[in-house]
Structure formats: structure tokens, C-alpha cells
Length: 420
Image (tube, rainbow, N blue to C red):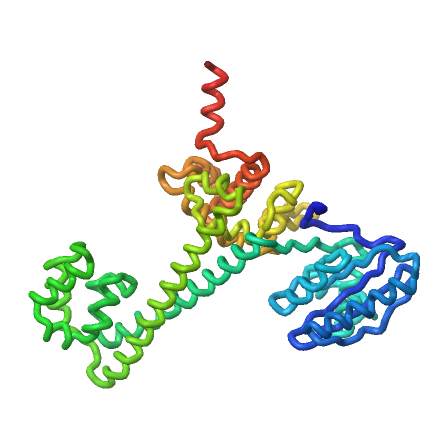
């Protein structure tokens, strides 16, 4: 398999049929252009299996009739889920798949007829222009275990977001019903808080339970972590509570429903994490990434799912560009712009690396000293963390490339060996 490169590609030559697609939810708009300038009028086809075969038959017929064509390049904008079935259909054909940045399409569209007009029939022509200019990007599609890890990581991200929204709703309802509960129990996330809200959600329920029974319940549910002191504080808070008394039955009904959804989300997230662990055992490169203290299984699975096979990239610059962590600046004349990350890559990769950076810069972390060097140079904390995230990605790429495990304080260890 040829190397995957997330960079500008010179894909079109004198024997290439260039076909492009503007992808929509229900219908796509196809277009093709021959090296001699012959082009088709943009045509619609359904975004389903029958439509894909119609598109493929049409462009393949052109190749059969024009004997001097040796290659088919199919390009489209970077899309969400609506483009995935077509991509997987075309990957089974003898075509070179490329994509263009939607931002480039918005900018280049003015070149056609000197008009900012944007239509479904104009877009595939604009995409073709961008590809001919050499600004197409290669397509990175994870396969096998990497594809499973990508789907699992994305599912986990969505589930965590839903659970966070449910916890926020629960927090608001509890505040209306029993505001002091949030102060005594330190929020609504804990197991003990969930048990109390399920069985004794109102101040009246806590008071009726009694201090002695409340103490025994807290000790049992928290496995001894919470005891008489916390029970007494909650009991006194219930006695002086300022929560509402009207409509509380309906609020309690919603609280129970939210708690059920949260429990279901927790079980689903746990199942996902278990499956991620199983899949990682089948990825040889995972052990090299996991050798870094502060990089966990979720981060490792997410990176493998987004990148696919690290070995298919020639340089770290290509991986940085895929993540949107490549640097740019806007300078002109005497003005010297600040360097920033482009953010024109996969947002989940940046998120995973950013939170991994937070882990590794903690006291005792593998990048703690490096982080403080950035701060001493005048970097704000956010930029310093982004710099650490970039460095983490470079180290991960090197570990996977060299099939090596991470050695903490490697430079110091090497110096000691050389001195010996």
C-alpha cells in the first residue's frame, strides 16, 4: 500500500480523469473533467448504493471511451457522516481519493465567473479547480481495529457529553428542591448522592429518616467514607432548608428519570472502555504509546483511531497537519505575526492531546519541567499546554516509528551511560 500523506498532492496529469462530488444528505452532485478540457455538465445522483453505481458507471464509461486515460482521481470536500458511504464505496474501486478543505472552496469559488455565487452545481467545479491547482489533501481512512477504535472513541465522547448535560439538569432540579444538599454532598456526581436522591430527595424525606438511620445509610452506601459528621450536616441542612414545597412530586419524577439515564450512560461508557481495552491488545503500536506515564488507554485508542497507522506517515509534520497542530503566522512588512496552531485538522486529536498534556505536566509528570520552562519564558498556560501537546505528538510518532518504549529522563540516562 502506498504511503498516506496528509499534505498537498500533485494528483492530476495528462492521463488523469478528474471527477468531483459535492456531497449532500439526500442527493450528490457529480462532475468530471478530462485532460483535454472536455467536461460534463454537473449531474445529480442519489446518496445511496444505486446512486453510487450510477456515478461510477458514468465516469468509468468515459475512461473506457478515452483510451489515453490511465487514472481516475475523485475529489470532494471534507465532510461528515453523509460522505462516508460514498468514500467506502469508492475505496473498493481503482481510484485515487482526495479531499479539499471547505475553507478553500469558499475562497476559490469567487474565481469562477468572478462571482461569490454558491450553488450545488458550481461547487464540484470549484473542487476540481482546487485539485488541479495541486491543493488536494490525501484521505486518511482508518481500517480494521483502528476503525473500531475510532467509532468507540467517538461514541464515548458523545456519551460523556450527554451525561454531562444530564448532570447539569440534575443539579438545577436539586437546587430548586433541596439547595443545601449540593453544599453538604459536594454536588450530585457521587454514588452516595445518587442513592440519596433516588430514595430521599426532599428535606422532608431526610428529616423523616432520622439522624441515626441516615448515618447508617451513608456509611453503607459510601463504604465507610461518609459517616456521622456528614449525616449530621445533611440532617441539619434539611431542617433549615429553603427548597420549594409546591410541585415537588413532579420534580422528583424528573429526577428519577434523569438518574436512570445517568446510570445507563455510565454502564454504556464502561462497556465502551472495556471494548477499547480489548481492541488495544490487537494493536502492536499501542504498547509503545502506553509506555508514556500520563497517557491512558482512552487517549491511545483515540489517537490510533484518528491517525490509523502511524507508519503510513513519512514525517511528523504530516501528522501535526492532520491534527491541526501545525503552526502558522500572518506577517507583512514590518508587522511580525504571532505563531498559532492552524486548527484545520481533526478536533478530537487536539482535544485528546490537550488533556494528555494536562496530565503529563502535573507534579511528578514526565513533562512537568518542560512545561515550567515554557512558563518561565513568558508563555501563558494555555499556549504552554499546546506546546506540550505538540511535543507529545512528536514523541508518540517517534516511539511508534522506532518501535520503542518511553524512557523517562532519557537524555540524563544517556549522559550517565556515556560517562560510564
